[in-house]
Each structure stands twice: as C-alpha cells, then as structure tokens.
Length: 90
Image 1 (tube, rainbow, N blue to C red):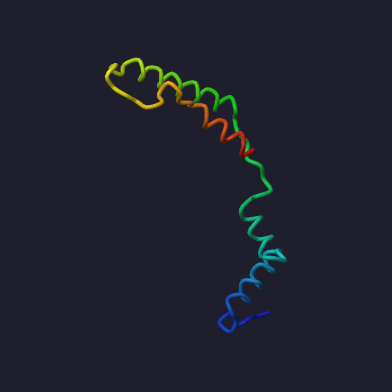
Image 2 (image 1 turned 135 degrees about the horizontal axis):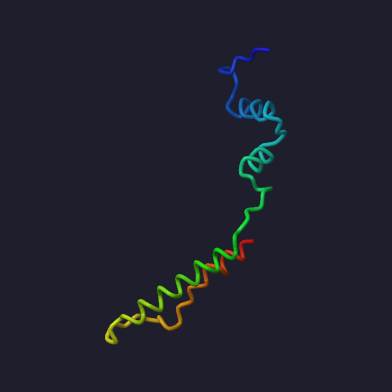
C-alpha cells in the first residue's frame, strides 16, 4: 500500500509512523524511547570510594591553606551530599 505522505498533515503522518512501529499512543512511544521502564543500576561501592577520595582531597587542600585564607563554611562542607542526592533519586 502506497500512501502519498505529502498529502498528510504532520500529526496524521506521526500517528501513522507510530502505528507502524507498534505504538498505539504518543505516550507509549515516548515512554519506550525514553527507556523509562528500565531502572538504571548504580554501583554504590564505587560512589562510596569516589566520595572518600573527595574527602581526602578536601582534607589535603584544607591542610595546606594558609591560616589567613577564609573559606566560609569549609569546616561544615559535606562532600557526601552527592551520594545522598543520588540515593533520593532511586
């Protein structure tokens, strides 16, 4: 079956294309292509090691800062916030 695509509106063309790809709705196509049904895996041990490395770097930088250098809140900096944010997402 030949369809003259130039005679179709964009929305009709998109619907035809989605149907040919076995999607009955635009939402089904978007969700499938966005892979929303596949949960990403996170290597928590790797994140823990990276956070530990960041803490070590921060301690070393803090150790070499001259006492006259003022870094607001450097004592209270929480490098592991990154890990907490990631955990909240999953």
